Image 1 (cartoon, rainbow, N blue to C red):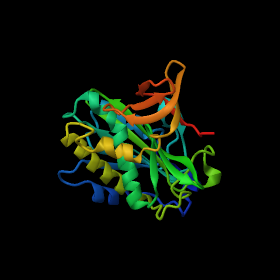
Image 2 (cartoon, one colour; image 1 turned 90 degrees about the vertical axis):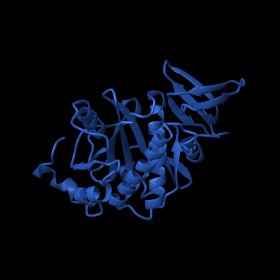
Image 3 (cartoon, helix red, strand yellow; image 1 turned 180 degrees about the horizontal axis):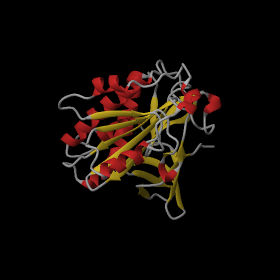
Image 4 (cartoon, rainbow, N blue to C red; image 1 turned 135 degrees about the horizontal axis):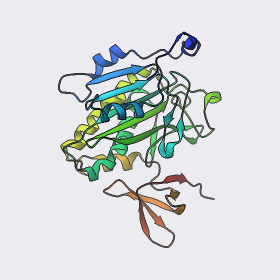
Length: 286
């Protein structure tokens, strides 16, 4: 974690992008018997996921630790893709979870659970309709077009932990978007872009869903997670192309999520193939 110095003052001068209040966030989120044990806000770092994984591995972070960065210089998505944005233009945070009472075979649901929690929290606080693109993207609609406004990355941390990172574009303007397919809550017409309540809303929703999932021993049906993800998933019902490891791809209709959180694709030859990892492209029908 690298603190800012005086030479960085210009990047913090945007009055439309006030800083997060770490003390207020702690007061609002950290409570006796709750999941969140600490909330730390740093001005700038390479990646909150990298930092929190390192702290967890060294035994310096406990479950419920939350690390937030006002700016990430080396944020990562799936396949090591870069995720960067102007300072204070988004919410970039990671949390440490240790679901010791859930079998490891069900830990693959954690990024999907986080997607449901983030979408739910943003719907309540930002008033934006969001959709989930399997497995880890948050979509908003801008001018009738689906655009990616956020992403989720889960990584193992030691033998008993998972660090889940979330990146959300909040106030990015059109001229700041990294690619034309990107979007932000502001561009999608959010009723609020105040990052403090947005972050609180997402973390409270995540605490709620994580508690339900753990109480059900990770069962996605009993906890309601599988149904909730399917209801908010923009991928289901679409014709997609799955780019799979080993330079293989399949095309077909995304018809379901199976019990392991995999996307089931029905191909033209009548085979239903579950996909556990890969890039999914939503195809437009001619």
